[in-house]
Amino acid sequence: MTRDNLLKRGIVKPPECLFCNEHEIVDHLLFHCVVAKQLWSGISDVFSC
Image 1 (cartoon, rainbow, N blue to C red):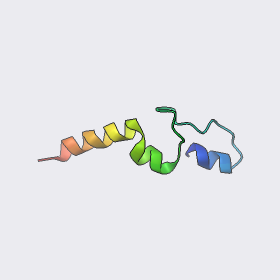
Image 2 (cartoon, helix red, strand yellow; image 1 turned 30 degrees about the vertical axis):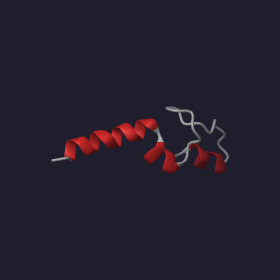
Image 3 (tube, rainbow, N blue to C red; image 1 turned 180 degrees about the vertical axis):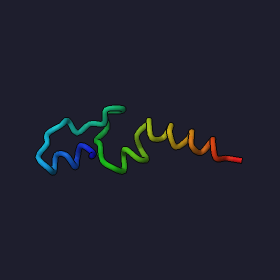
C-alpha cells in the first residue's frame, strides 16, 4: 500500500517516498520516482532489439 492509502485507512506514516522523499502516491511509485525510472529504463534496455 502507498503511504497516501495507508493514511486514508488511519495508519499514520510519513507521506514521503523512502527512495526520494517526494510525496508517495501510486503514480509516483510506478512512474516518477528515480528508482522506478531506473527500473523502467533497465526493462526497456532488456527488451530493445
